[in-house]
Image (cartoon, rainbow, N blue to C red; front, side, top):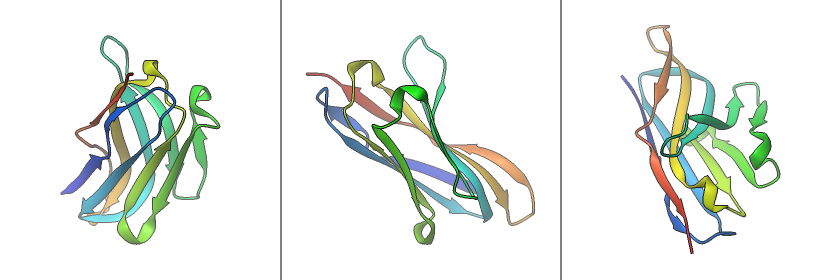
Length: 120
């Protein structure tokens, strides 16, 4: 069983910063890719940033230059540093992982989400 747990969400003023964390645990062999998605009420879930095992990073156009995805391999933890946050970026932020389990299965996992609210 693999589990992803997000943390770090909260209330921030427009222009402020937050750092989200996603800790992966369980029967993992390899984390092939990890990404952050967000979903606001009434909108579809969208990719914010993604990090592959080869070190390749992908960002949504709207967050380039403001958000940074990073990882700590020793802790199996991924981060999303968000700066210059905008009110329209308030959403439930989810961690997503493409993980090879110790059984050799490649499966996709989601965290439960962490709420980010951007408001003055």
